[in-house]
Image (cartoon, rainbow, N blue to C red; front, side, top):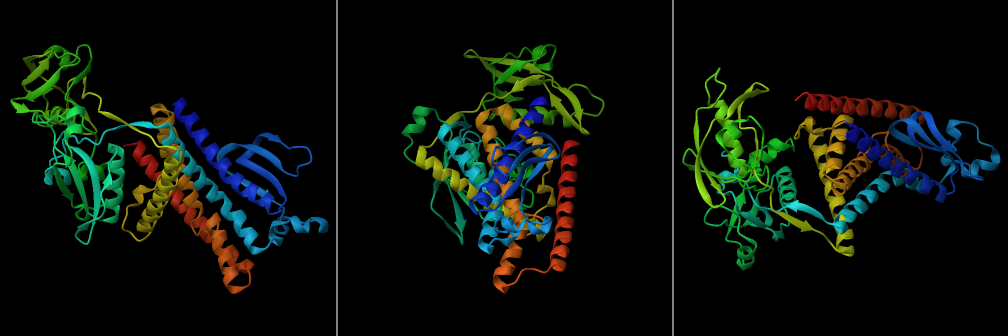
Length: 477
């Protein structure tokens, strides 16, 4: 909980400071007098002002926003000698530049953060497939556990585009998720697993000169209104391949009573071969649902296990537990070994370009999802609020520095894109008003400006309410 709070406060503080600094820096460059630069609202916790500077810097008690207060005749009398430094007296292009600088600062920060992650490098699971759910697109297409995806291409009007290399499981899911949202099928270039269903070794993979086959996923046939775990489950890309190995065994558990040990590889359950860790976990869970009501243990199962080069036969009785009204089997041990990892790293210029490219991709995806929610083609459940953001801040921070940077980049893109929406209370709303002024040659009247701002506040409050409702719903399961 402490990590979550600290990670959330740091993230929000950094992103708001960057956003407001964009406004501040361009305002000063345009000759506008800035009276206050505030990160946070409410009672000031800290304030300072440099000698000779007209700007007071403030850190507020509520870290959920910020503002840059500029000299402006609409907010109070301005001495005649300072009229040239007032915001409202500036030419249209300067006012537009000052307003646009905040969101653009967030987008530039995101590109830099993505670039830094590319330069540092990150360990990601290899694009090796686990057993897909039986009803998923991947299973119906014939994809199997242990197969490795090395290339992917979108299919447009029946023809695949240029094949893009797949460097990791995360890059595979990112590509497939975007294609599913666009309703486009994809073609996967796949290297088959070894004869025993395990991924090819490094030597064998190096000897494979080309993919063994191509597989088409008809992503245009599924409902992609919600981009969440259920979408990936329907596609069949839930998690990367993990070996069916037993990890830490809890004392007094069903696994310990059966004689299972850490490092045991499960080859078969009830005579049926086990493909991987995901397959074994699914079978253990499903055994609880198949057990009659009232029974606390699953019927004894015969497991075939490989231990130190020997094959053993053990009798295992998973325990039945009830979670959220569902009866599940549990053995009291970690199931599945660590997935194969690959180093994903770029040089300076490649990393910089990758940062710009990923920022553009996430921005386009964000706008696309907002538009689809507006016209009813995507669920409003995709909206997230501060509780979900805080949750992911803590989770990403617990995974390491680079994962936290990726989280910061994602939220920075969201903040930049959100502020460019044409709602009068946001930066995008001001730019919309300035566009009207540029086209018509006159500013929007005070009456219409008031009406637009009231409407913008209503829409923003509605969005915040939906996001908060979604947060609470997720929190309560």
